[in-house]
Every structure is written in C-alpha cells, then in structure tokens.
Amino acid sequence: MNQSFKKLLTVPIAVLILLISASSVKAQTTFNVNSTIDAIDANPGNSICEIASGNGICTLRAAIQEANTQSGSSLILIPLGNYTLSIPGDNENLAASGDLDISKPITITGEGSGVTVIDANRIDRIFDIQSSSSNVAINGVTIQRGNVGSGQRGGGVLANANLVISNSIIQQNSVSGAEAYYSMPFGGGISSSKALTIINSTVGYNSASGQGSSGGGIYMDLNSSLIIQNSTIVGNSTTVDSHTGSDGGGIYSKASVIIEQSTITGNVSSHGSTAGSMGGGMYISGGPLTITESTIKNNSSRNGAGLVISGNVTIVKSTFYNNHAEVGGGGIQAGGGNLTIDNSTFSNNAAGLPNFGGGIGFYGDGQLLITNSTFAENRSNSLFLDRPNHVTIRNTILSTTSYPNCYLAGSTQVVSQGYNLISDNTCNLSGVGDRQGTTPLIGFFQDNGGPTFTHELLTGSPAIDSGDPINCPLNRSARSHTPTRG
Image 1 (cartoon, rainbow, N blue to C red):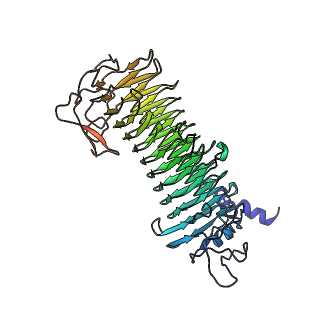
Image 2 (cartoon, rainbow, N blue to C red):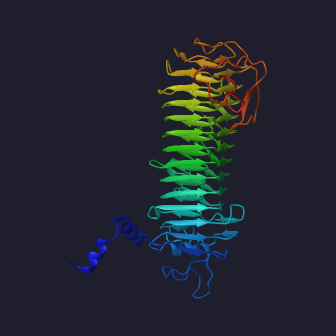
Image 3 (cartoon, helix red, strand yellow):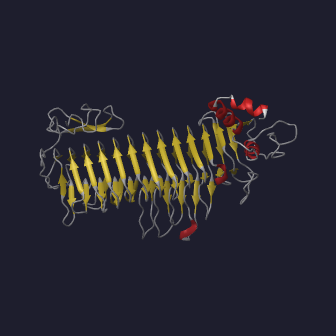
C-alpha cells in the first residue's frame, strides 16, 4: 500500500473534512476605494484596482470591474465621500459606463449612509446586479438619484440575484415609462427578482411614473421574496399622466413578504382621470404577507390606501393609522386569501365613499379573523364586509362616534367568538360577553409603551376586565394593543 495513503488513513475523519473544506474555500479579495472620481480600471483581471498602471488610484467603478473578474467573492471598502457617476452609456454590462454592473459575489461596505453617498446623477441606475453574482451585500451607504427610462426596471438598484441591504438609504431614484402600457415602469428605488432583505435602512422618496407604474419604492417579481426589518419605507410614489392607474406606492410584490418592526408611511399611488390606483403603502398580489410590530400610516390611493392584498396575510401587534382612500379600504382592501389580525390597532383611517371600509374593506373568498384588536374612529366605517359567514371577531373593540362600525353587504353575518365591545349595533354580535351600543372610553392615539402607538383604556372604561378571560393577551398593561381587556 502506498505509504502516503497509509498515513492518510491515520488522520481522523473530522480533520479530513475540515482540510477538504478549507482547500475548497477561496479567500475573499478586498479592494479599498481611495478616490471619489468616476473612472474605469486600467486592466480588469489583473487583481490590481487602479485607473492607470502604477498610479494606485482605485475608484468605485474600477473596484467593481476588478471584483467581477475574481474567481471568489470580493469585499469593496468605500470611505466617506460623494461618489458621482459621470460616464454615460446604455446596454453595457461590464461596468465600464452607465450603471455599475455586478456579476460576481460582492460585499460593498461604506462608512455610513450619512457620509458615503453614491449618486447616479440621473445618467442611469446605480447598481445592476446580475444573476451570475448569486449573493450581494450593500452596507453603510446612500444610493441616490438613479434614473432609467421606458422598458427598464429598478431606478436605483436592479437585482437579479440575492441582495441584502443594511444600514443604508435608497432615495430619490426614479423609473419612468412611455404611454404604452407595457413600458414597465417598475421599482423606482429597487426592482428584484430574487431574495431581497432590507435591514436598518430607509427606502424613501423614490418614484415610478407612466402607464401601469408599480412599486414606487420597491418592486418584487414572481418567485422572489422580501424581508424588511427595522426599516422605513417613506414618501415613495407611483404616478400616471393620462387614463391609467398605478399600484403600490411604497411596495408592489408578487411574492412573499415579511415586515418586522418597520414603518410604511407617506407613500402615494395616483391615477388618471378614468382609472384607479391601489395600495398607496403596499400592493401584495401574491403573498403570503406577515406584518409584525410595524406601523402603516399616512398612505393614500384610490383604493386600499394602506394595503391591498389578494393572498394570505397575518398582522400581529401592528398599527394602521391615518391612511386615506378616495373610494374604499382606507386601512386595508382585501380581495382574496385569508386575513388574520391579532393584537393590532386600526385608527383614523378613511374611505371616501360611505360604508366602504375606512378600516378594512373585505371582499375576498377567504376568512377574516380579528382578535384582541382595537378599531377607533375610522371613516366612513370600521369594516365593510361582503362575504357571508367568512368573518369572525373575538375580544375586540370597535368604536366610532360619527359613522357605523360595520356595513354588512347582502347576507353577510359576523361570527362572534365573544367578549367584543362595540359602540353601536351595526355588527349584529351576540356572543358570550359581547357588549353592543357601549362607548369604550379610550384615550388618544399615542405612545403607551408598546411597539407601536395605541389607544389606552381610560379610567372607568367598560372594557377594563371585561375581555376574554381565557384567551386575553398575556400583557394586560397599556403596552398591549388591547390593554386590560382580559
């Protein structure tokens, strides 16, 4: 037997596995950007980032060109400064002109979103992340003033690979389309066809304009997925010029979405003179969607100002506040799938037409389950319900002073699981512990110590100690969205 092979047999199997693994892992290459100018690399592929032989000047564009030639992953470090793209060019995919094309696994790290700014100067988008890159991470930068025209997507970032954005700002980017409906003005800030994760970041004041525009802030295609954690989606818009509508001012998604400890605020979907707009905050046409400890507020559109959904949705410990729809579904318009709401608050949302669901307009064939929640002062009512025997409510407060709480279309009936407190008799509830025609005495919408703003029960409220004694939320203080209901 070969002596080398005999020696190999004496090596523990675990050590062999580590040795094989280590030999197969390629070291990450690091490129340090040291110039804010926009210039190409002198010799892409020699692993030296410099814009002229021997001068040592490494630009962001040059670093990406070199990283694209590496066999393994690369780390690009960008110091503070304003990095403005200045080399125009369309339909070029080697990062030599226009946007910064990424074709290999790369991590881009700046010194902070407030000090490391990448500006496209409206000549193109900033990053075109190609499918061959597999996994890309962007951290600690601002990406701004990207712009692409008709037939393109992603004004700031176009991602066809998995992308993680953290501690960053995506702002003032735009995509615009022509009068033709299929001009695809999708994703003013970001357009993604793969897994997109946004952490501790802001996607703000981006726009998609033109017929059929969708996803002013973020557009997610089929077979993608979106996770948003501790982030803000603010001031994004979809707009049209003539007779069509636009959808998803903040977010438009055809796939699964998870939102945790985040805020969706001030987003707008506008419409032409003879068409509608849907989902000022979010339009989720696929799903599932899960929202946890988050706030959806101050969004607007023709229908479904806060959220339009057609798949399965779960909302927990979250708040919908001051969303305004011109027609119906101020907080939510639900057109399909199951909608489950627990321990959440719907306050001061509005629908423009009478009885069209200031809080929720529910038209779907799925089930609506509302538990341990508060609906307060929604206009023109709290709930528009248009599906017989598909609505269940438990341990919930519904209160308005000038509008009905429920509008039950056709033969719709609400199934009560008990312990609801309703300020009028419009919901026709008769479960154990239900109290109709009773003013709940709730306080102002404010910070009561929980993950989002809520309404605290005032001293003497009939809701105190009148909730479900078995299934009441464990937190019985003002931190709960249904404080002292148990």
